[in-house]
Image 1: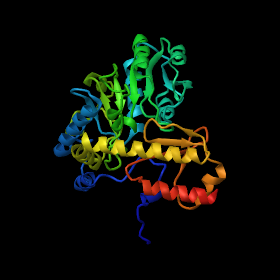
Image 2 (image 1 turned 120 degrees about the vertical axis):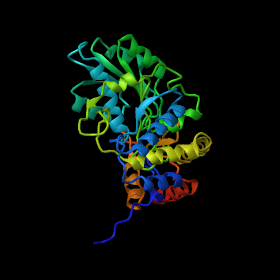
Image 3 (image 1 turned 45 degrees about the horizontal axis):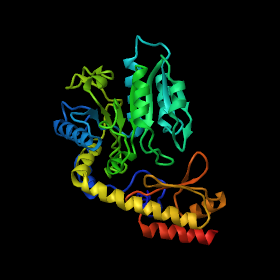
Length: 352
């Protein structure tokens, strides 16, 4: 059998994951055979998971956070909707969730799996239109969602206003900061638990947190919210479980702790400053070539490149994705350097 090798990140401009930090890689290897889904048996990794949740709480400014390390943002978002639906039992038989049009496709999965109606609020300047969202909220709304670092444009919704809409309706408020959570602490955006009455949040160490995949995160303001998910586990040493999956990755837990201990806060701040400056430089370079560019507010650039040019650079091995509107999308992750982007621009110019 031919030996397969992992894909090189050298030409990957589309991914929100990146090369793990060396400390995270080493920690992941040490805990490959552990399962935090059975904390009674795997006590060491269970203790590490508590440390991971505590460290994530520092990032999002939440004292004594509840939560756990998920397989990624999709699981965390599904679980947040599940909390909201379960909490509303007896209040409504027809639950709905209000999300912005920019919400990640995981909410479509959540609505399908959990049998809730998904209502999509239109955007203004790539952010949730709060007046439009207010018109969608009613007595059957169980959750309102805000995005803090959208996957297509890196935008941050008006979190405080959306939180008020949710709580006025007796609904939970969830923030999806899966990608943006490790960049936003170094900006002036209002997005976290200290800025607004957020109930639950998604934040992924395996994205800008530089942990090994899989390592997402679900945080809750109080443990009673997670209790909405609890089921009995009679054959395990632990008596109940709030997670969606049973067996989980101890490697992801350990690498999350290692990455955050190595990088929070100064390392993440330095990486954000580097990536943001690089995104702005790259946007200016594309603009100077006559391409329409969406100004970056986080290290993500969207530009209206002709489809034939995108196809041409893909043929040269560049991994470039598109927004729903068709712009080329570039995510300036830690593995993306100025040299990387200069090489891309040279190939783009040659193809043009």
